[in-house]
Image (cartoon, rainbow, N blue to C red; front, top):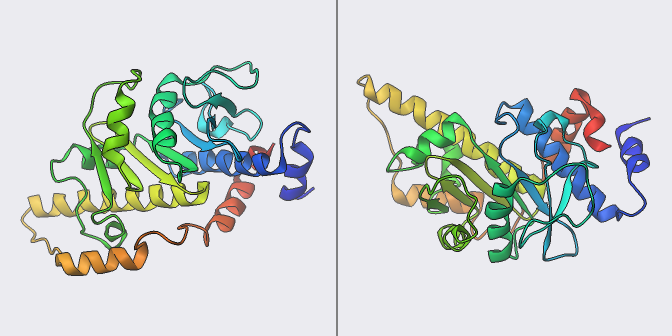
Length: 261
């Protein structure tokens, strides 16, 4: 049985094909984050809006590692308060409801949110200057990032308004001293932005380490940075990450196709 047959045979009858496809993509996103080493034990969370709804999202169950996430064990919860839409043996992650719910409520265009706690994105977020346009990877984020000051573990609903204000229309929000929120109009786009931010942050830290040892840093002009950013995204008329997503799914299938079940 190939991967698609496995996926089709695993879909419960009460879940629409559209929702199941999103579940499979989101489960693949979890597996990819684990594969690239961007998970954080059972912490952080990645979500997708349930197709055809404005008030429901899919989120990981509390207590599972990212390589244990499957299409079927994702939880369907209410965006506003986090209560389960469908019964489950698992509980949702409260902080995920606060952070992700804020984005979905404030941004109808967003269909997926990826949240990471990596050394690189935390380190860059802790720098006053944040992410600098030092690499081609970083150019796509030039003037297209929001920053949110650390308020502690995100368990208070009143933080939602500030999260919405700080992300504004940007595709990515840097959570200072905490991590990253990347949004997308589908799972592939949110993952792509996460990937490119991580590469941007990792390269910046290496460059800054070299500068601390006496090297000189070259920063492209603001005009070049803006032009390159517009070439990547402009007003984001096209979804990013679509070209590589089928290949990433094939990688997931080679690693462990159980994410489709």
